[in-house]
Each structure stands twice: as structure tokens, then as C-alpha cells.
Length: 135
Image 1 (cartoon, rainbow, N blue to C red):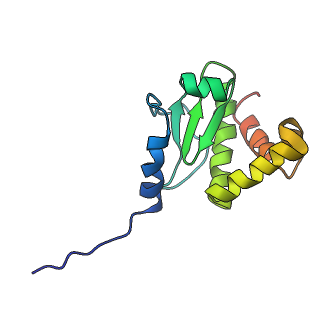
Image 2 (cartoon, rainbow, N blue to C red):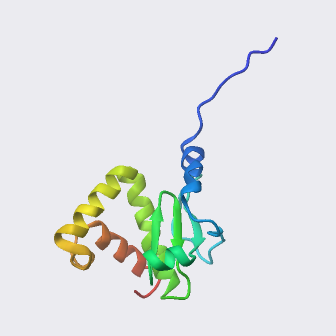
């Protein structure tokens, strides 16, 4: 009798399990260009819908490995690059560590100031996005 070997779920499988948190209708799509080499655990690019447009107008959001992009609002390549950097930051800092830090930075020094000042997460994402398009 063969013994069944139980394996733990991989991190990509665990994170993908949280897709139920995203609104229905956020379909994944293939992007026109590469925004980095991510190995097996890369981001999933999704088109925005009415919920994304309400909470993230003219931009996008990185929610775990899901990049929700509002296409047609601005330079979509810049936004994809910017949100991809947030994905990489989440991999580096951890999901909770990333959101704790970015919320602190949004409070002090503020969203716009953090985008213009080196050392902040938004600044890193802004610089990464500029490699791919115009903000």
C-alpha cells in the first residue's frame, strides 16, 4: 500500500487563495511588455472596474500579487511599472510590513511628499514606473 505524502501549499497557491477578496470582473490579462523577472511567483495584472475606479482613480493598486490597473486613465505602462514595484516591495517587506510602512508614509510625510523624496516606498515605485512610461 502506497503511503500518501502530504505537502504544504506553496506560497503562490496560498496568496492566490486570497483572490476572493477582489471584486468580481477583475479579469487577468497579458501585458504588452515585461516589468521584471519574477520567476514562478510573478504578479497578476488585472483590469480595473467600477470599484477600482472609485477607490483608485487615475491609477492602480497592488493587492498581494494582484495589480489592479485602471487602463485608459493615464500612461498605463507607467502605472503597471509603478504597481509592479509595490509588488516587489511586498515581497521584500512582507504583506503586513509593506502596508504598515506605506500607511505610515502616507500620514507622514504624506502621499505626494513621499513620492518626491528618496527613501520612501512611493518614491521607489515612482522611479521604477518612469522606466516604463510617463507619469
